[in-house]
Image (tube, rainbow, N blue to C red; front, side):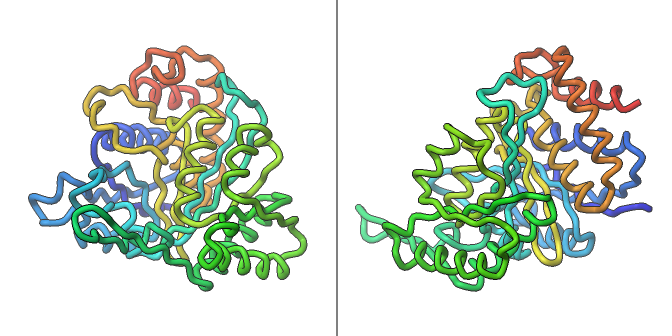
Amino acid sequence: MAYRVTLIPGDGVGPEITDAARRVVDATSVSIEWEVVEAGASQIEKYGTPLPDTVLQSIRKNKTALKGPLTTPVGKGFRSVNVSLRQQLDLYACVRPAKSLPGLATPFKDVDLIIVRENTEDLYAGIEHRVGRDAAESIKIITRQACERIVQFAFDLARREGRKKVTAVHKANIMKYTDGLFLETARSVAERNQDIEFEDMIVDAMAMKLVQTPQNYDVLVMPNLYGDILSDLAAGLVGGLGVAPGANIGDEVAVFEPVHGSAPKYTGQNKVNPLATILSAVMMLRHLGASEAADKIMRAVIAVLEEGSSVTYDLGGKAKTSEMADAIIQKMK
């Protein structure tokens, strides 16, 4: 069976790491027709926007996309393309696994958790403005519908993955209306899913627990901002952003991408770890139902990590982006 997938190379190091992931996927038995479309800062001069309509049209048509990182200006400039993409396609669930990999020197060897982040509202709704010269305001949007949808998604994911516990993360002790609504809704949804253990935890306590006993957690579900922050923390427990994959999932389409950014200072150096993108492609293959190809890649990835001679600088090696991909492909033969 042939699958059709939208490929968005992205900005900065995006083209290098998506090329590596594409070559690895193509080396499996799965047949994929890639439709390459461009988005990001490089498209502004041509289209007047970093997110041309052709990108959205392609994703809606193909239902599945693999995306490289897109540059977001800090403190000025155009709005985050990543956020716009998630909102326009209603990719309400951001799924970011953090799992210990053999061969990596990390503080823990038994981390295996999944962060589920609500992707469409909270402070990331982008409703903010200046108040005079010396102040600014941002509005935090939390709705019962979005909370119910994301918490039910977390329970469904836990059930599908054979997980035993869902933890709702919040700050309802301080933000009593917004996070209070999230917590109230999470507890209500948990009542309908009693085959899965449920608990809730304040976000600052959760951060501490993750660096003390991460092995105690299965699926964590939370509003947008906390999910963005804690997923990076979780990545640090298992080897860093270079090995952190992600998925943005809606009812109609799914977009898979590495957690890390575009790293513009490394553009063209063939230096950056491609694993986060390759592991995102593994998630994509499982989503498509091509589990055999996904397993084949994972076995090769683990073999390369355990050997340690063909890994990038962040993992203690000297291999280039393309060389690490080549090593993984070689292990699949």
